[in-house]
Image (cartoon, rainbow, N blue to C red; front, side, top):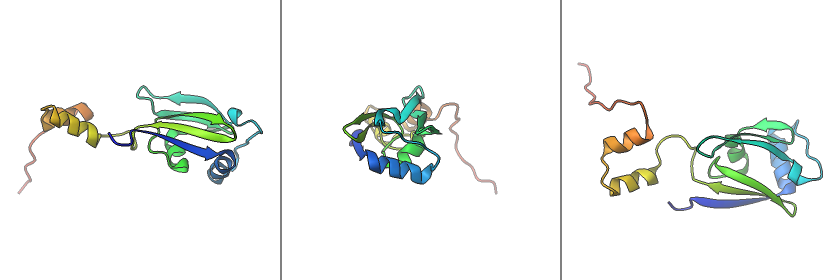
Length: 130
C-alpha cells in the first residue's frame, strides 16, 4: 500500500497553537514530553483517547487537527518538536481498497472480501418492489 507509513513533525509552538485553537482549556508546561499522557489504543492500534495538556481527546480528533493520515499513530517529542509516526491511511472503519484488491488478486470473490471486512452481514440479491 502506498504511503502506509508516514512521519509528521510539528514544531512545539505550532502544536500548542493548533491544539489550543480547538481546546482553549488545555494547559502546556515547558516540557513537551509531559504534554501527552495516558494514550489508549484499540486492539487494532487506533488511538481511542489520550490526554493532551490535561484535556482528553480522541485519536480521530488529533488526526484532524494535525492532518495525520490515520488515527493509528505513536507520538514522541524531540528537540522542541512533536513527532507522529502514523500507520495506515483513512478513518479506520470499513473496507481497505488496497487490502480488498490484494484479496481479489489472491483469488477471493466479492462475497469473501465483503464478509472479511463487514462481519455479521448477509449478502443477498436486491429485488425492487413493484
